[in-house]
Image 1 (cartoon, helix red, strand yellow):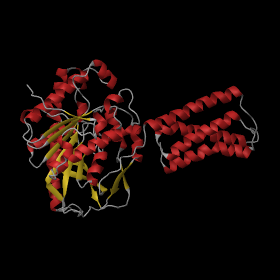
Image 2: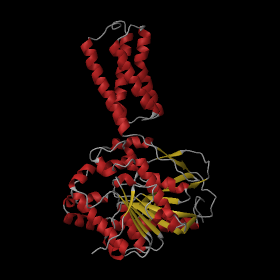
Image 3: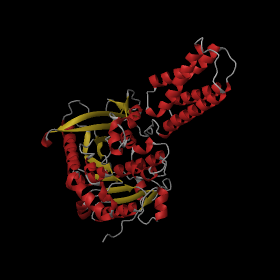
Image 4: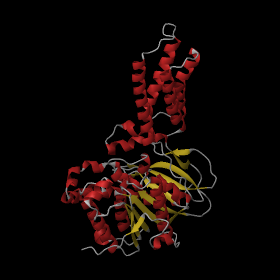
Length: 474
């Protein structure tokens, strides 16, 4: 909870205690104590900003303000409620305060981890137009190394918080509070002059994601000297036009992904190809002057989450400008399974062991159907890796879920119910630290040519990471 939110909760509870005790004090002082939560509520609204989770606190504070006004009226001064009425209203008020406090705690205005690299982090957003696809608009965002010690406006986490609402089937206001999240990246900061040119990483989000969904990674990579570009795919919600009922069986699941490969995947790959073309143009001449001859596209890596990783794998299969590919719990489609890749390939997946028993699945919040999905997905990855001509790495992050590889795991304080399957049981801060360590090691080795011993095998510092041998796929 934010500081003024916590102060408001405490003020409401103390005022409730005052009402229940009904002490004999001067009426003006009594009214001032009653109105204090209302004043704090107005201050919190003005300074930290409104969010719907603490609406019950606002209502309780407003009720206290009305009681204070009533106490100042001559006709009502000194009038006290019957004890039963006071206790009943207080019980409802306590419930409202606890609900508001609980919601604010459960759905926090979260903080991204502070980057650990030598650089500050700059960011800029723009919209590109692809003239070859009916002037399609493609929003993108950069994260890049800025001079150490840079200061400026911290960028908002997301421009349009309602973008998260459609995938989860909730009203538009539900994620409005994410507009209050501020990142570590500085808007419009200059590009650091430490290097002539920086290696470039292109990211693709999943079917229900947004370009900012892996900011914990983007900021860390930028602080370590990488330029990161993330795309908002135009057809990111197209998956909802497919028939989700197909996922009820293994055979149906295969048909679902076949439809996805036919209707959505080509659009995402085309977005990536256009983005790389744009990177080449901007490296030749950036109208804003920032990236001209500052992008080392000989060191271009791709990474993505979920469906974005599947698109990244296909782009790398088609386009040799991709020099290394990292998948965050993403499947690969049939052509990549058949042909493999020529680039180094790391798959970092959730804790989805196909040999888990029904009891183990239930403990993690999964249905038995998940075991079949995991088996098919991992067999496809094994097939692609066996046919890949460069080094491959298959890692499993124990106790993690699918969205543990994104910022979405920070959006709840604790995973309960169905969230356990999505987020997992590994604390988000630890999961992100581990993911960043292996992401940096992979690109450092295969783009920058560094040794990166973390990729040599299991590391005692990261016991959560399991190295999985690629079996022969029949």
